Length: 296
Image (cartoon, rainbow, N blue to C red; front, side, top):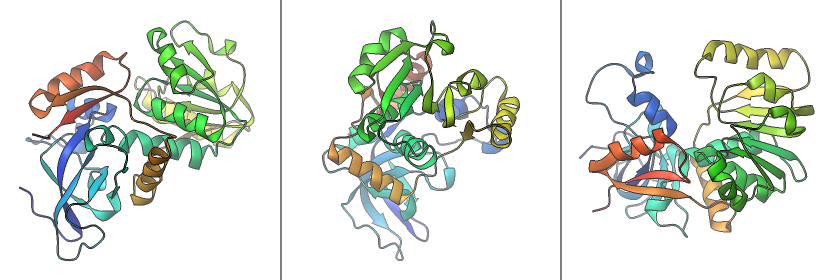
């Protein structure tokens, strides 16, 4: 069992979710940043309960139900116990069990950051969500509906009814839809990263586009394109990485408790079958998150 360092809480993990970044790290694509030494933990977010803390950690008490992300961008939430600083934790929603709560921390704060804080989405705006049936997209569609935007979703053909049920007023198959058929939008949330120029042209004057990842096939070129969008024209593209902190996690919990956002779970796997959870996410096309349960 790990020992909490200064300012840290010891959390007994009930569940962790599998995110796209986990697949990238596991494949070694980020080994220049993560290093090459093993063993190496995996997993970004979690839900569980406080079972201990350092002498100077006072924000939570033993028995509190919490959710959060690993400190300082470290991986390793797919474990029985983790040590985390208070700023990466908040109380979990009172109306969710901890296994289903684990589906939301990373993707939820990403969607809130993109739509509320970066794009400043407001009621009446026209919103396009690319990758609407993915982890971030599922939350973005729900949040867009809650804010009062007109939500258009791009997803797999088999998932169109699913995203409509989440709140999309229009839904299109990304594989067969030409962007020029979609019209114009005030806000675009892009979770795919490719064809950025084609979608930027759909922005209305003063429109805002937030992208969660660069083009995986042309990362440098796509990042340069985002930078140039700030220098030329009125249609801005912003690449960002969410910074999950207590305030954002607490905002997410409030959205859940109000009914504005709910977790969608496709599969729950024991830790001993975490490989299955990764394989399912790699295959794609599922309706919800893959959860790794550590509850005995």
